[in-house]
Length: 230
Image: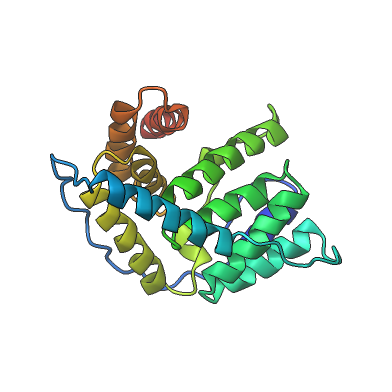
């Protein structure tokens, strides 16, 4: 438990998971992406976007108005809620930590990771890529970049089943929205950090094809190439 706290407190970035490994389960492989993206009428898209923004505002609220908790304590409590499956509460703690320490990569990455099971895929990707940049800046030339960390996202969840359920939700979204580049990247990222490097590589390539300027997708593809040679 408290995987993000373990990462934040580590003197050197070695292992970012702290939850005991559960028995392995087979996660169903993703279906081939459809060749035609499903598109809603403009009015429906606008209405859905407004509703999504309202829902996000209800999730991203600050806790601890008295400022009695440090950002590290906020991340610790957020991690506890995440592990319990209370993702909305976890998001509030991670959001507060990120607001109070904008340069903290752990808070930003944690926020991105919890927004994914809540279905806010664009915002999750934005937070994760921002966290990656902050992580690189904090490490400089002294250590590995984020993609080189020994992170297993399955260990952040109370069970492999819970992880598989949120993964299937993301897979379904990508299947039905083939040109959603941020969700495609997010699914590739999730595969990458859960041991499915081959699947990740295919989706990072798709994300880069959708957006040739998606630097983070290119970064992971380069890293995967290097990993294959070792």
